[in-house]
Image 1 (cartoon, rainbow, N blue to C red):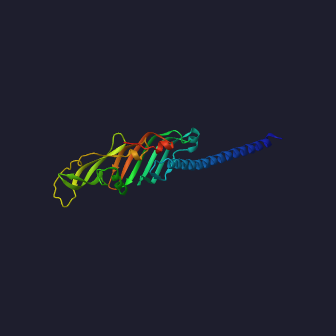
Image 2: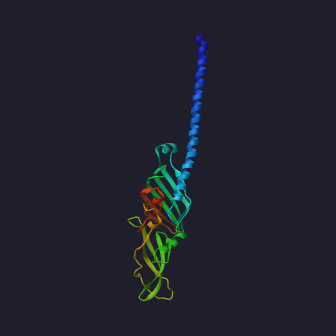
Length: 253
């Protein structure tokens, strides 16, 4: 056989081999994409179910979870780099709220702890009024821009009076609660002709509200943003155990 006759056959075999290799690569690429898609759905669902099972007592609702980045390498490494967890409808001791949390270094097997937890909890104005039941110093709480309005009853100079006060609300330095401090006070008893600028025991008297009792022990309240429509609370944790006991054990003040 001549060299001229053999060369076209070798070229055809070479082209065929190249096409086969390209086909194999494309099939593998498709399989990887499909596996990534399927695994992402499974991982996201498992994380959401784990969080729902581990909610503290008195907390009910459903959550959504989403792992960021490419899943397969993270699964091989044993942990997820970053996970977004959110719930648009969750209740804590009957108080409805919404939550968005970002966690890092989430173990695949659910054991151990996650790190650098940072999230926000948002309460609508209609939900905040229920918080008054956690303090005996006022009867009702509502939101105003930049703070809260408090209403209650007290005694001044032998008179039983009703009042409406506006105050500031700040996170406590230890992150375990918030402090409400009434500032401007208005007497609401129409039958009493009292003129007072301050009410002893009410004006400028800090009212602590323990929030740790509703949160996993490791979480801390760091900041608040209050408007007349809603209150947004930032919560953080350097390390948060993933075990049911770690998530279900709440803090104290």
